[in-house]
Image 1 (spheres, rainbow, N blue to C red):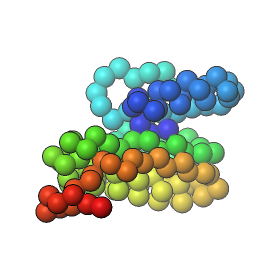
Image 2 (cartoon, helix red, strand yellow; image 1 turned 90 degrees about the horizontal axis):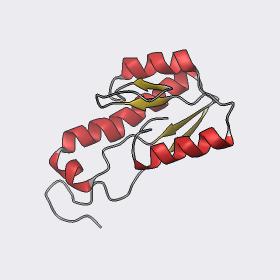
Image 3 (cartoon, rainbow, N blue to C red; image 1 turned 90 degrees about the vertical axis):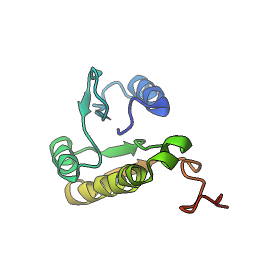
Image 4 (tube, helix red, strand yellow; image 1 turned 120 degrees about the vertical axis):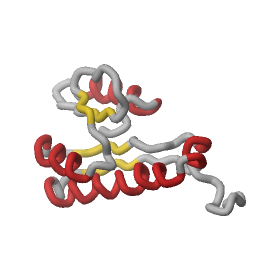
Length: 124
């Protein structure tokens, strides 16, 4: 699960752990700090790292929550937002295609992370 330490991620991990106690849940963390048990440090922008992790863990499913989702941060760091939100997602999809094509992907996104167009006008 990417984005495991975000708002939705930590609630989802708790619910899945309770519902499926026998399942092995692996979460990713990008920021520095202490890792929770079962989590690994992984930057979804790093295609090779994603590829290695997907090959090593061979998951039955992937819940992809990692993103730059705060509108203000997205507007201030447009390139980083695209690198994480689009590039990171593509890295996950490609690694799944190569290593676990039978696995399911649950990709969760937010509709208001980037509401303005590149020239600053509000998008519809």
